[in-house]
Image (cartoon, rainbow, N blue to C red; front, side):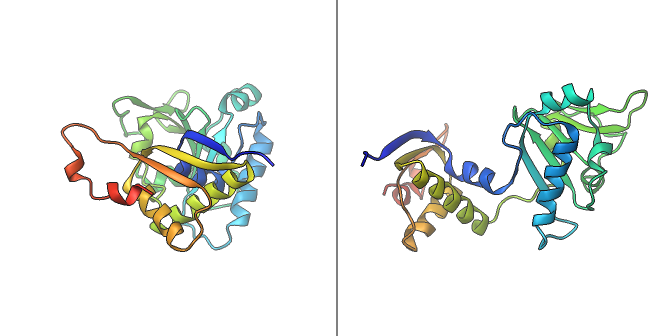
Length: 219
């Protein structure tokens, strides 16, 4: 027997969402293994339509570049799918998309780089390569924001992992209304297996008088 652990700074909703996404788990993989993993994730989501984005996270992009010399949308286009694909590097600065993602987002060779972002181009042209840097992803048409049901599933996944690791209390360091509602729903159904403390991010000129959910988040 051991005492329960306390995690004083986590983000369980986004972390739980990551557990449910196509996760490369920071592994230093070559191109063939990366494409194989993404295809496997697509094959597992048989209920999705061609309009649903696939999000891939925690890619070791630099290991991939070392293996290939560089990747483009053409590599992702080899995968058997019509769905838009967004692959996020583990550093959260570099993103890799397929042609379907660019098309549905109306991004073309005429699209200019946004402030604090960049679209990499194919050599000798202005055609977008499928590699996006930083704020360039803000011009993508997807993925769609999570629904309330998605958030509850993410919270459940986070709580499951916390249980497995012996964490009995946690503190969400930048809570939002979505976080509060998701964990409140789980509490209502009797599934809250760790004590949560939710720090609501308040920025001037806002103040506590404008925050209706503070009482909800004090459990």
